[in-house]
Image (cartoon, rainbow, N blue to C red; front, side, top):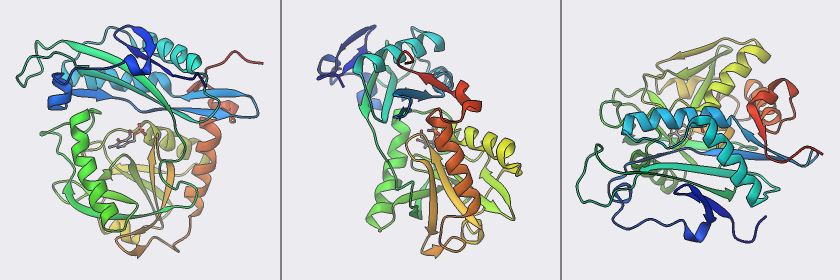
Amino acid sequence: MASEPYAYFNGDFVPLSEAKVSVMTNAFNYGTGCFEGIRGNWNAKEEQLYIFRLKEHYQRLLRSCNILKIKLPHSADEMCEITTELVKRNGYREDMYIRPLAYKAGTVVGVKLHGVEDGFTIFTVPFGNYLDSSNGIRCGTVGWRRVDDCAIPARAKVTGIYINSALAKTDAQENGYDEAIMLTNAGHVSEGSGENIFVVIDGTLVTPAASESILIGITRTTVIELARKELDIPVVERQVAKSELYTAEEVFMTGTAAHLTPVLEVDHRKVGSGAIGPVTRKLMDLYSAAIKGDNKKYLEWCTPVYAGK
Ligand SMILES: Cc1ncc(COP(=O)(O)O)c(C=O)c1O
């Protein structure tokens, strides 16, 4: 890895320590930014770093930007090229994380979206496990409700909305759980602080629909496709009751940071037998092969960073 990593900032590759914003920045004051979380996964056998579903992340960033009235200076394809170049310059030979941020960069005091200058930056960090995705976690539903689409749209990955996630995560962890599960205002299951949720009921994979104030996760989309194509099991997107978390055969969370993380307990109730279930296990294996470029069928999802050997 390079001694000091580069960041992409204001149209240039600069040392990370030079990528700085003013305390007057609109996004710092009001949470008016949107971002992505993208993983680069190290394949030691091939000595290759594969960035997973890079273009889909930038397509989602463009949708978030449209909601926040942020005009990006680049197309999705250009951002993919810039990102690959940045990661290559930083020389990672390990799992890592890419954080592009599009934000209201203006420094005039006043809260609004229109007529405020925009900025765009990307930084990268080494990144291992976020949750215990190998062994599973314990979750708790929390009192904080997922922000409603009419308040801050969860489908936009907006910086300010993460107050909602941070309140939920801290509540869950201070009460002894590993991760929070947030409910909608109507009391249905929405999502984790940084993950989507799936439950297995009578062999069917069920996940809260897009209408349940969720971020439409790229891992969620990937898992739905893998389940349908590789396991031939039905997938249903619908409202999920909180009590279904207690009666499901299996529960797991999905996210770029979290991968597929089995949930072994919810609100002090064992999920199924309390061990990782067969559907979760199969999907974990399929997903981990896909993100590392080990399943050649899904290589189109992987952007190699380095020239092949
Ligand atoms: C609130 C929230 N839900 C779900 C996800 C999962 O989305 P993805 O699979 O695109 O990483 C994330 C992570 O980005 C998140 O922050």
